[in-house]
Image (tube, rainbow, N blue to C red; front, top):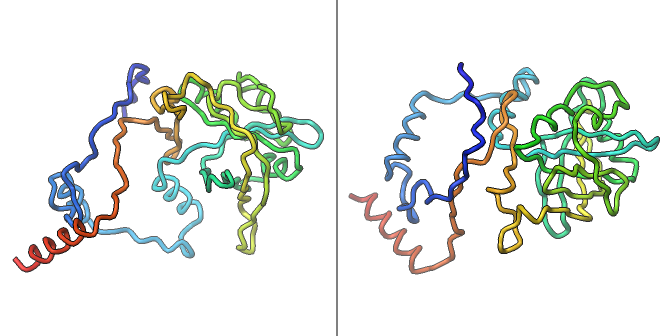
Length: 264
């Protein structure tokens, strides 16, 4: 497979939704795009019983299918003052009130420094990775020995936090200072992963990535995401799709139309 050079000139565009003519009760096959998608089902389904499948095969399949995944670039500090920096793609926002995020750390081949440090009460920062420094961030995923300071090889810059001891990544345009409020171990008989639920205390966001409404502009932010294998993804074109408002008459007409179609 030929790999093309990275296109720094690509710009995210806002487009119409994929099926702009869709309305309530319309089947997927009502559009050419939908019919083409449904054709793939003719090849059948692969069904995986996770209790019986090899665990590494389950891992590879899940990380290739649960995509794109945002990346938590986590900065922690140990009780003895050793700093640690590492990316985790099992990460997302949980809720905004209170502001909570979660990320998970796999214990392979050992329990990592990040969950150990997260339990020490000193707090940590979660930084979002953008295209310009993704290689820097990826370098910190190296299988370094315990107590190794990944900051030293990353080429990234520490910035002071307000509430927690761990520094934030200065190059990140969006960073969160966090406290661990719960550490959850899966009840599987063997502890394989630590899930950290974190309360966001402060958010640092660069003004140049904000739009006129003081929200993050994805075209300026340029965040990256994890896909399957060693693949990363960037944000392509976006489209707006408003949440529908309840209109009883509109719903009734759509259901009546569906009944007519089914009879004909």
